[in-house]
Image (cartoon, rainbow, N blue to C red; front, side, top):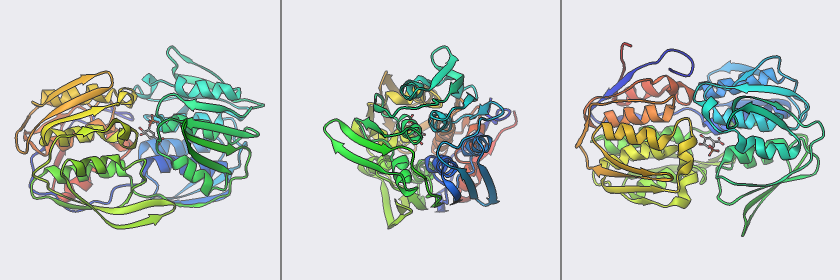
Length: 450
Ligand code: S3P
C-alpha cells in the first residue's frame, strides 16, 4: 500500500537519450527544519522553494497542531508565525507523520522540553522503525516516552517540565538523532552538548546559527562537538530552500547511464555532508561537472551537468563517506549495475533501518532483474554487467520506500525488458514531480492499471 492511498503500480522501459533541464524540488531536510525552526522563532519566517512532498506537508500540519500558523502562499512559498522557544501548545489529537522518520524524530526533539503530551504515529513503514535512538537521549532531559515493543510508534511523549541540559554522544551516525537532541536543548537552560564521531548532515547547526542561537562546533579527537546555549530567542528568517541533492541523484544517475544523455540539474545544494554520491560517481568515471558554483543562504550550491558516461567502473566506496550519501546508495547500486566490475559498499548498516531495509529491498529487486548482488549486515556488493546488458523484466517491491521505487524505475530505463514497481505511490513523499520531470527529459515511465 502507498503511504496515503491505494498502491500505484508503475513501469519504466528503455528510452532514447535524456536531454534538457531537470528542476528538482526543494531539499527535504532543510524544508522540515525551516518549518520547525520557523515555528520555534518569534515573528514571521518566510520560506521559498519548500518541498511540497507529503513528508514535509505532514510536518507543516504538525506545526499547526502545535500552535504555529503556517500559511501556504502557493508555488512553494510559505510563511510561519512562530510561537517562540517553549511556546508549543499541546495538540488536540494524534500527530501523524506519515512516512517521515525525519519529521517524527525532529518533532519529538522539538517538543521534548515543553510540558505537553503528544502521541505520534505514522504509516506501516514508519511504525516499524526504531525510535529509542531518539527517546533514549530525550529521557536525559527528563522526557518520558511510552510506545510499542521495540520502541516503535505509535508512541506518546510527555515533555520535561523542568528540563536539564544534556551532554550526549550520538551512538549511530544520524542527523535525525543529533538534531532531535539539539532541538530539545533549545528549551533547556544552560549548555547542551552533542558529540558525533562521524559528521552527518549539518543543516540543523547551520540553521540554528542563522536563527540567532548561540551554537559552536569544534572538531576534536572525540569527533564533532556541538555546543548549544539553551533558551535563546530565535529570530524569524527568510529561507530560500536549495534544491535537493538526494532528488537530483535520480536524473543525474539516469543521464549517466542512458546512452546519449545530457542533462542539466540547476541549483543543487552541495553541502559537503550531502554530496558524497557525486564524488563517488566521478571516481567511477562519470562525466559529471559542477557549473556556476555559488553560495545561497549559507549553503554551497551549483548547477550539475551529467552526460552519458560509457566507461563507468565499479569502485570500493570509502565507508567514511557513507553518512554524506546515505540516501543515495539505492540509486548508486543501479549505476553500479551498468558499470564494469564490482562496486563495494561498506559501513552502511544504517541502510537497514530506513523507510525500508534498503540493502534487502535493492538486493532482491536487482537479483530479480538479472544482476548479481552479495550482502552482509553492513555491506553489499553489486557486480556490474556493463551498458546495455541488464535483462530487467521483473516486478520489484518498493516496500513503502520512495527511493527504492525511483531507483527501480531508473533501472528500467537501461534494461532490455521493462522493470515494474508494485507501488510508486511513496514517490510523492519526497519527489512529487518525478514522473513529469523524467518524462520531460525523455524517459518512458508509466502507471499501470491495478
Ligand atoms: C535526515 C537524516 C538521515 C537521512 C534522512 C534525512 C535528516 O537519516 O537518511 O533522509 O534530514 O536529518 P538518519 O538520521 O537516520 O541518518
